[in-house]
Image 1: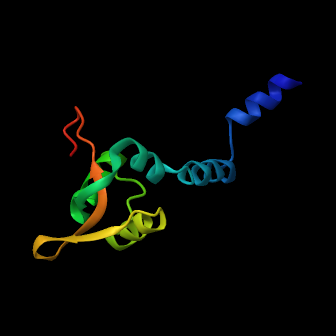
Image 2: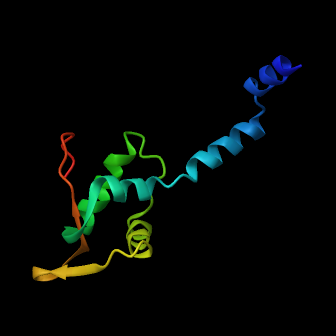
Length: 103
């Protein structure tokens, strides 16, 4: 009887598909980006961080928050804000350069 149950699982109803989508969207992609793409200290402009996160999400940019929400997410994770020469606003983190051309 395990085989029919497995076959039923493969043919999931829409409710189950929506539950899976909700679970996948709850994964901490933002935390992964912080760990993969940034380092504590230094200074990065707000717009540069946002652009890098958008690239990190991929071409469909699924889950890209508004800029206001993105900056709030950084603050919630304990990343301090900073203001540099001429009032340029940013955060006290540094983007890591990588081979993909981001940062």
